[in-house]
Length: 66
Image (cartoon, rainbow, N blue to C red):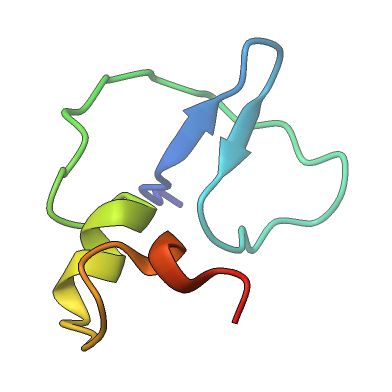
């Protein structure tokens, strides 16, 4: 059986990005091929907040005490 699984190496172990349908302790052969991260999928908090187009003062801290 051959299955392609995307994973991220955290410095110690490979972490699959989704469920893996294997029984515990199943031996597998792993071939590692690095991929380029898709920047369009991951977005910073700031980009997400800017994309919301919220209305309000340009400097929200001007009226912080109110």
